[in-house]
Image 1 (cartoon, rainbow, N blue to C red):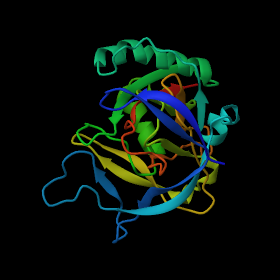
Image 2: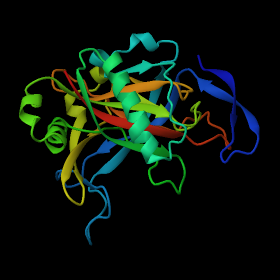
Image 3: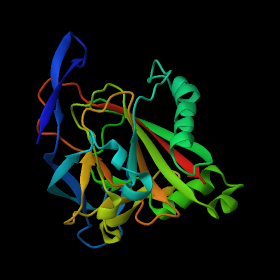
Length: 287
């Protein structure tokens, strides 16, 4: 049953306190899934401006209505090695300004590293390789992604190790390697464009399609997700700034241990509610 919880937050841009009913419980929304190129060519996407005469991407999209369950109140049930995602609550941060790259790298990165080492079973070493701040604003540099996807394929994950730790890559890849994203809001509680994540066990390998991710200086690979019956999607209603969502994008020792995810429009979000702001930090996890 859908419920609501009252919270006090600020409008964006802030003017005066406004009482918001945080949407809770299961919700039905339209998620955007991958659809193959019309000519069945290998799919590709240009991260920046494509070469003259080429489109941004050669594949299309398939919107599909999906029921999304609420993990609020069931947080202990989700495990990285089983579902591909897990949660952590009451996590403090000493960062006072997430617009400061220096604070993010000098304060938040060590906090994330310690969090992973403390809460991810088997983790012995962490290498944080990048982060992205997303804001639901037309003028934002990076906005929430409205496509079901996985950040790296197996090949892309292995390339990451070679790219960032070339002298150690061979020995590191001989043992367990994972890529885990740590996701949190910056202006919680989240009341618009929440993040949906799929139980990795419910997503077949045939539904995970590698897509060339073409940068100006290299080619990576992400994965688009085909819509299939039986997929189970979740979100964490009203995520607050002291909550963390762990998304496992790759596990060299796991089976189907990758987490499709996407932003989605919650039909219960009302006009004037603050647009979601969030940060995700991506980590290579060894051990």
